[in-house]
Length: 533
Image (cartoon, rainbow, N blue to C red):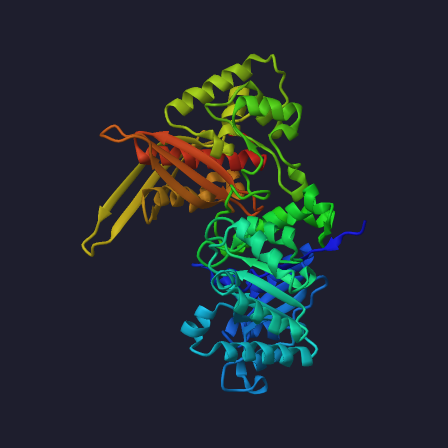
């Protein structure tokens, strides 16, 4: 039995760019397009040429793709002018994109309120726009905006809109849940009814995530007949986002219901690049990845409860629906106050510590973790601090930099500016080194005191020059005059690997310094720095 082809249409560069706080540069768009083409998607919607300078320039770059068709987006011609004389349509033709996706109204309410034209005029605009691009030998697609709302309000007119485009030879009629308010059972019913008028091999789905059902609605649409699925990397998009292709693609490829019926243009090796593709987007946007994303999130295959870990060690299928390596992800055994012996052993193995189950140090480490978490530590998000704790207990961490004392002051000058200054007295090879720095706040000042004086740290200077503090978070664990503060620090270096450290104290500066020193020690350890004499 031959499988049907499912086509993947990515709209990150257009829909994703409408996300609050997202502003792609030309270089950003090119990097994302290259990653998507390498992944193997069928279509990459590059943007709306003519609508803004960035999208116009992007298409002028003449991007070459091996797998995907670069697609230009626009809207139907305006009333009162011909398709040939519409500047918006001309910009799309001038883009030289082999595929064109035009959006048009399919809800009579919007035709009246938003466009202020008659239903017949809207049909004429759809018809003439389709004719125009098909005559120019473009692969033409019609995005039926607000189709599901339109169908629920006036099914006869909504169908007339898409049939008008289809009759002119449109390759894809895309049914859009623009408001994101349609539920899966409605998608199943409506798409099934649409396939009686237009073949499923010419239908697509474009779902928004306003009810958290964009992925479910996309799957429901495929089950009902559509054969093109639109979405974005990580579900990026306006309001609550679009259907997440990082969830849809592996579902189509790895889940038997879909893989037995359909094939996609993304092979086994490229599926393994999904996690990398997901995190590339976050890197370009300079934001922290959502670790709870299905398939590709850092916590997607994390296990915290001791019973769960024991079961996973015997057979991963007990708590993992797929092998994480299939999508380029990895299993993560979390260490916390809920951890059992199996958590500790498994976590030690992942960091390269081979220890016998009967070793008394395991029980000692487990007790230490639970005691520390009782006073406020949390190691499930601070892997570097846990590794340092484990290796110190086992005796594998040498002494690097000793902190003798530190002093932090915060004052407001006559101009009203807040100035933070820090001094830290460090010891390396029995020599005392005074480091001073200023910053936006006391922690920033402490960080600068060490970072800006790395040349003074003798043999450690070359190891710490590329150390960067990425993120700093503070949480007050209880209230009152004796509040306990937990500080988490995320660090990175030129090798691109991030690590997380933690510090707890009644004093926010002390908690910060503990986390900061752990970050230094972890950097020196992983770079095989020599011990202090």
